[in-house]
Length: 337
Ligand code: NAI
Image 1 (cartoon, rainbow, N blue to C red):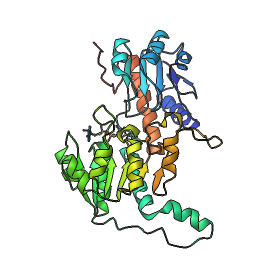
Image 2: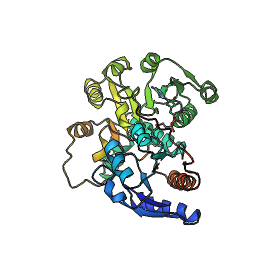
Image 3: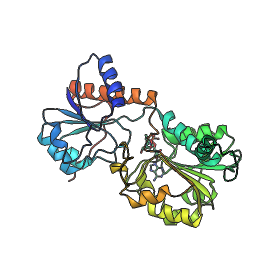
Image 4: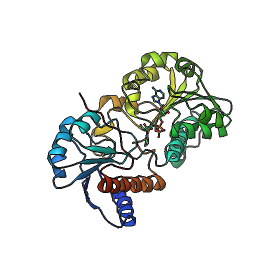
């Protein structure tokens, strides 16, 4: 199939070329660096499928242009699909496929890296030592053993984080409206209600998808219930947290540490080198001023194993669609009416 691959970087090409070759080189992949939105969608002309990543915009207007170009498949190279208007896709007869699981370890391990870095202030220590500053003031951390970790969303990633944190002898509690009792019990955690999770956790880690229910799940009200100096980690989706409320929480000292791999308005920022430009997003710029905030640019998934798995599953989705008319891992779409 002819596939227009949007938002590509050199690393995407490497892994996609390898996966396509392993599948017999059957697909013709056109790599486009540009992000997909209404303006760039016409570049898909002549392709039956497009491949998109997390910050591509697949709203109704974009999908209409794609459908007009003859695109019949959107192959997402992500697990999350919150950026796709599924009702519009159904109306336009466009199938949507995704990569439901590639390496939950990659995201879980990055989450734990953020917890350890924030606690032991490794990012500051690294810079200090390189400047010949061996003073310890300001680097004080705490023992993880015995601390309570609250996991929000006990799917593949959340359960992995729970398992790793149990390895540090932490107490693990979790909240999920669709609990996996056996899965959580197997890693030594237990379910509590949302208020209890907020009130008891020393560290809160978000691993739920972005849905209308989870948008701004962590808002001013939730933050007010948290323990003073709580650590909040978000490697799920930016909009699960109300960033303005987060900033107020940091200013008041209620929140002691923040680790973000995702940000509400990351679309125009992440995955690009903007180091020679002023940051236009004042909210993001404010976040960067806090000494106890650690931000990575949506890199939790970024391991060799994850990239290889993403490419393989995406190629498999495209091959299955070509053979049967449905991707291997479809996202169920619903008509708007
Ligand atoms: P999953 O589908 O296995 O698990 C998600 C869990 O969240 C489910 O158990 C679900 O019941 C739960 N959930 C749904 N609504 C909830 C709510 N209101 N409160 C608490 N829990 C709720 O998904 P997986 O693979 O564990 O991924 C989780 C999220 O991580 C993805 O949706 C995606 O947004 C994000 N992600 C981030 C990456 C990164 O690079 N930073 C990479 C991959 C995924």
